[in-house]
Length: 118
Image (cartoon, rainbow, N blue to C red; front, side, top):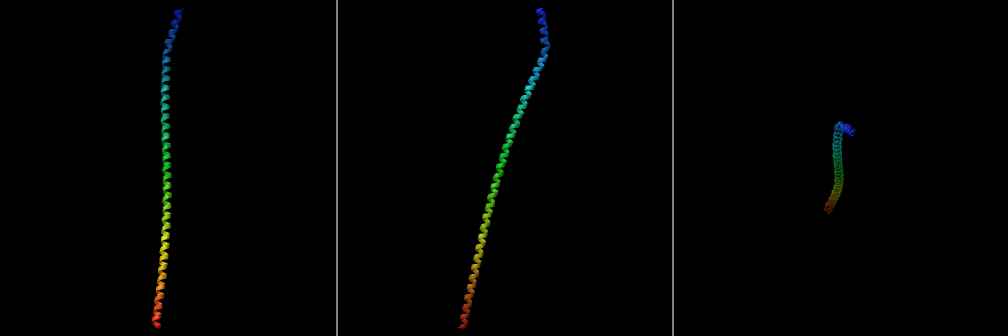
């Protein structure tokens, strides 16, 4: 009787072995798929990190450019102020020249009058 049970059990094991092998293969393939998916996720995360770093660098560049524009505008304002001051100085000098010319003309007229009266 024991031999009969052993034979039945052995036959059952032999019949189920291919199914176990197929199941094991499926598990191995699933594990490999999980590994590949995990690697893909890691690569995607690294790409996101690189993109974020690039965005930060671009933002820093924009800030530096804006600061440069502000400095250039301040320089233009200072230059314009200098031009205005120079123009005002020229106007004052011209007015002084005009006053001096008027004084010369009056002195000449006085000399002419003095010469005429003598």
